[in-house]
Length: 353
Image (cartoon, rainbow, N blue to C red; front, side, top):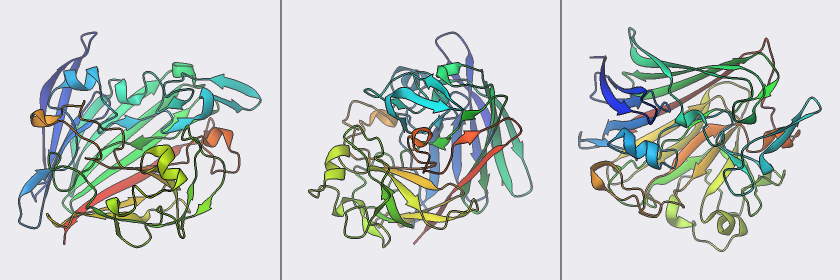
């Protein structure tokens, strides 16, 4: 039976009350979403034995998310990923953003969409239950031009799909690149490293980066590199190979140029955890996907149930436009103008093998 529940999840530092919405489907799958940051705090899916496990990293309390979170489960914007030196030029005007990742701008800045309170409205339909989130990012917020009105819709279906729909409109030319930042571990969030997960990414190319993880502009063929996941391969099989790109990132933290991009929804990735049998397929309308292997996790983030999240205990598959696109006119454009509508859809579909 499709259902939703709402409960108090604490208050922000300035006293705003935060709610947690739990969506459930007929198969026992549950996803809990906070209206602070649009954060997926919990995602229960069955394994081969039918047992439900929470397959996303996160915290038990709002206070932990407020104190220190590496974007666990959050909506990321206005611009997911990095913008070099926190600067870009649009229509001849240079805009300067916060530099919150060394010399670069990351995931929307000091107070990106992961740190704002969204208006929330749960709903139930014939074959899905969901949560609509709305936020207006005012002109100049974090240095970005334009008043940006954003709607994010999370939907849980009886096909064990978590669908995320993004929509935005602006009153001035601006740049937009929204994504979702769950850290997945299909064996369960407390089960250890993710190196045994088998991953397929439908991409012939990736965008190499410099030492600051900014794209060079090249679209490099994955053939013969540790970034070739066109055939399902264990994440840990080549992660420590002596390859410059892996050294720069401490593992995988790269954008793949997804095949067959035309704006339609298609299968771009599949992760399989052999012990539990859980499979997660990723479908998206986006041209790129950042695969991050949890390289910066070091045990300092003590998560749900008091579990310290150690090195590489979660992975992210962040569907997106390419990093630093505003400074690379050869990349697919992230410019949004008045009268246009930014629309994007990503589906995480769960099954067992």
